[in-house]
Every structure is written in structure tokens, then in C-alpha cells.
Figure 1 (tube, protein in one colour):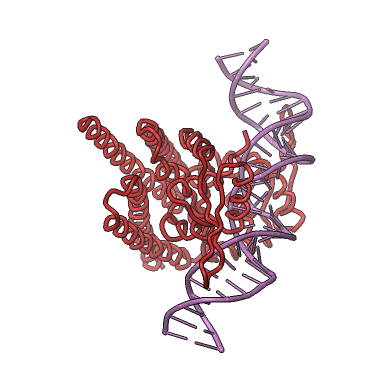
Figure 2: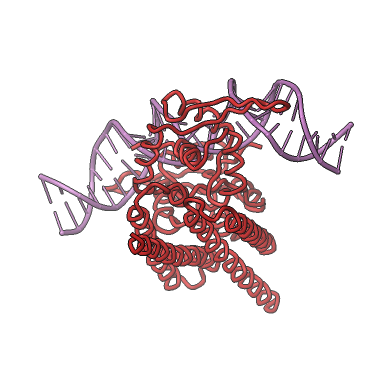
Length: 189
Length: 189
DNA sequence: GTATCCATGTAACCAGTTACATGATTGC
DNA sequence: GCAATCATGTAACTGGTTACATGGATAC
């Protein structure tokens, strides 16, 4: 079975939550769901066009003076059907590729300091992610109370928090382990 | 900057740990590092060939009677240099795409049971991963004591364990949350 | 007999990334 | 003046996946 084009469904799904332009979608990806999903313009605009041709979304051009025209996309009934079909299907297994772990494992001949630095960078990144997640959570909790699907947003954020915290803990442990080995090696010299 | 071909370095790095055939590399990927890295034949054989042409690895064909011939690859000095250059470089940021979280977030019009089922599958998968990690760990700990880089293997495994445990905890919490909402909705009917 | 393991490869495809192009408006 | 934001797109590229092809050996 060929792999399905996830971008199609991501766009369809985001438009189902709220109509908007390609630019809006990109913003949502970057600002609210970047901790688990990303899209880029090179994919967004062509796919939007394709979805329109297939009748899964429709377009309305909005003109506001002193601004570039915006193409606002709305999901159609047909689009909603295809989206829900996909949503009901089991999650496809996707091959994992964690470059940090690969590098760590292969670093038998690399100075420990270099490896430790990578772990410290990772640690900082995951901490930034936690801050960012706290912001998104705050924005959601103080926003419109009755927002449909709020609990789903919070569940997704919680996943990010669990994973990022686990990463930070692992970084700490691993850095400590490497430093200890380093100290022991200096001793035995 | 164009993205670098990670497969090149993964193969180079695995051959640096131990010479072997394309088949061997695939086995190592599937049996020992599948929790954070994967490769497939469609990429392994062509890249191996390319690495050989570039002089980063060299080949020796092994004939054993009653068996297909094996092409054993060895990393060269030049290959080791290129590998270490890459290893010293910072980890490249790669865009995240977690289909489960995307589906979860977009499932505003999907029956809760369906979502819960996905979470239960995820939970089972992560538990299997934990079992698998325990096996790999056991295999390593009871293997040759002085194995170079053993601590790096254990660190990588530990990462997998931290992340998988965090996932399981999140699944439990999220399933509980969804069930509770379901109960409340039934009540108010 | 039949499934699994051993072993190597090629061809077709495409999803996703990067780089490029354009240009107005707003805030510092 | 300069950077950032708003806004839409195209072209080139390629890494990675899937499917296909082949065939002997071994274990049940």
C-alpha cells in the first residue's frame, strides 16, 4: 500500500476546525501545533489547489483595502466526509529517525565534551518546548470557554509535556553518566 | 542548505562499529535500533554502492558453500574521517509529524470510542516497545563485558524507555479523561 | 509442501524540502 | 531606512518508500 499524503488531511482537518487561507494554516502550524506537526508553503498551496479541484474545499477571495487579497478556504460536505473517513482509520506506522540517538550511539571515537554539548542543546530545546507548551495552554484556557474540542487540544499539549519532560530527565541522567565516566578516566590516568 | 543524506552516515557508522553486509545492517536496524532508527533495502544497497565508489567503504565478497555470496563492507580511513566530521556536527532539526496527535486534535466529530481505541493501540505498542527494550538491554548486559561503547548503547536504550513510559502514562491519563467525559455526557442525557 | 531465513538488488514513485520570485504595509 | 508581517505562489530536487524480481537452504 502506498503511503497516504498526510498534508491533505492536515489541511482538511484544520479547515474543518476553522476556515482560513494558506497563510493562516501555516500560522496555526507554527504557532499552535508545531510541537507535533509542521507544514510548509511549498506543500500547502499546491495541495489546497488540488483539494479545490477535487471539490473537497472551496475558495472565496477576500479583498480588504491596503492588504493583499486573501484566498479563504472552506471545507465542503464532501471534504468533511473524506476527512472523517481518514480520521476513523488506524494511525499508520511511520519509521522513526532520531538523529541525536544515532549520533550518540556512533560516537565511540568522538570526544565526550562534544556529545555532552549535544545533550545540553537538546535539554535546552526541550525546556523551551515546555515553555512554549505552557503558553499555548494558557492561551487556550483563557480563551473562549466553550470552544469545541478544547479537551482535545489540552490532551495533545499534555502529550508534548509528558514527552518533553521525559527528554529533559533523560538528558540530565545521560550528561551525569558521561561526566562521571570522564572523571573516572581522569582519575585512572 | 539542502538536507544531508542521513542514510550515508548511518551505514558508515554501523560499519564503523562492525563490518558487515547490507543484510547485516538491515538486521541490526530491525533488531537493535529500530526504536529510534530504520533503514530499508531500497536505500541500503544503492548507498553502499555509492559509498564504495567514493572510497569511504570497501567490499570483500565472502563465499561459504551452501550459502549465497555475501558482500562484506569495511569502512576506510577516509570513511572514518567523513563519519566523524558528521558526528561532531550539531544535530539537524527535523520537522515533527505525529499522526496520532493530529488525528486526536481533529477528531471533533468522531465517536469517542474510536479515539479511545487509537489510544489503547498506542498504549499497547509502547508497552511492547518497553519489553523489546528490556530484551535488547539484557542482551547487551550479558554480552561481552568490555564492549566498546556499551554505555552509549545503554544511554540510547534509556532514552527509549523514558519516552515510552511517558507515552504510556499519557495514554492512560487521556483515556481516563475521555471516559470521564463520556460518562458525564451520558448522565446529562 | 510451505514458511522462514539468507542474500542482493532495481524501478517507479512521490511527499516533502529548499530556494526563488514578488510586492505592499506597518512599526521602530 | 530596515525589518518584520502579510500574502501567494512555482520549480527543482531528492530522500525514502514500496513493489518487484530471484533463488537456494533450512526447519516444521
